[in-house]
Amino acid sequence: MGNLIDGKAIAEKIREEVNKEIEELKAEGITPKLVAVQVGEDPASAVYTNQQKKNCEKAGIVYELKNISSDITEGHLMAEIEKLNNDKSITGIILQLPLPQGIDVKKIQATILPEKDVEGVNPANMGWIVYGMPHLAPCTALAVKEIIDSTEVNLYGKDVVMVGHSDIVGKPVALLLVSQFATVSICHIGTSEAGMLEDYVRRADILIVAVGKANLIPGSWIKEGAIVVDVGINRVGDKIVGDVEFETAKERASLITPVPGGVGPVTTAILLRNVVRAAKWAKKQ
Ligand code: NDP
Image 1 (cartoon, rainbow, N blue to C red):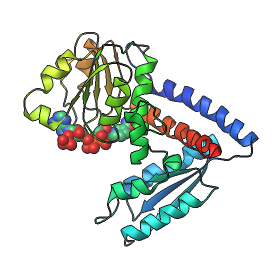
Image 2 (cartoon, protein in one colour; image 1 turned 60 degrees about the horizontal axis):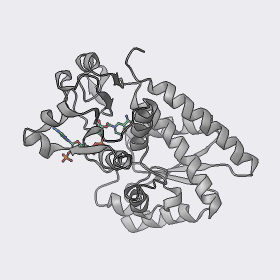
Image 3 (cartoon, rainbow, N blue to C red; image 1 turned 135 degrees about the vertical axis):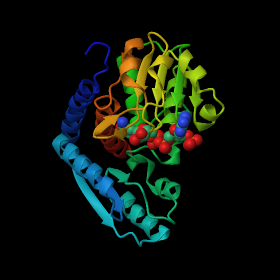
Image 4 (cartoon, rainbow, N blue to C red; image 1 turned 180 degrees about the horizontal axis):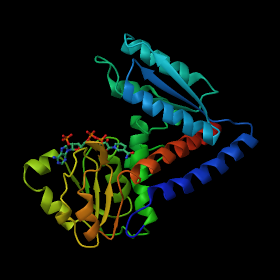
């Protein structure tokens, strides 16, 4: 693979561990069960839920899709989530986004029991990351961490630049890495508009980009020998590309994730790992 980070191989290793842990849980009479809540119709969500079902069933996790009509009120949706929280046979809950207008996503995410919150979006689980004690953290953030760990780089004192500050990627990634004593800068639209993005990117020993804009980062900005993790997924014509100009970046980086085949497969495997962790957490209750 040259200097490419093989996300599929990392994912495969995680899946093997997950399969083993599921066998152990089953031997104790526990079968992990994941329920995905889908409010209204969304063609993109259908692609995700079909994939989730396939991956879960392959791993021996029971998967159920709960379709809810788009005219549900916020209060009723919270009540539906409570029912799933109280059902002991369900060990994990995923809330598919987007939700219909008028429903506060954060409020619904906060209703999911932290122990069943396999996407790590409940504020309690976010809080555990702040404490440096992640329980169930957002899958993509954990995938980035897993990829960086796979390079065996010592993060102590390294200059890490995180481009993108979303709640599910940029912010948790930054916190997970600062816990290992990296010096982390978080860049966002304000950094770009202040004309400072290039300066930050050029100094990064480890660059992570999660924005969703094709070729936002020219390869010429990459520091020689940097590790580059490209989270972005963008459709350009009939191709999927990341946020980093790949061909030129790969000439300068010591290691770089391809898109596709980098962060994506690891994220998928981490979701399964989170489902197992949730089932174990429930066991302790
Ligand atoms: P969000 O849209 O929630 O966040 C994007 C971030 O990028 C925001 O912080 C935004 O800042 C920032 N931003 C926007 N424009 C610029 C700019 N010109 N310069 C610097 N920062 C900018 O997206 P997500 O975090 O959910 O996802 C990011 C990308 O990662 C998407 O392409 C998504 O498809 C992909 N993704 C991939 C996954 C995988 O498994 N591979 C999983 C999850 C996401 P502001 O909010 O201030 O505008």
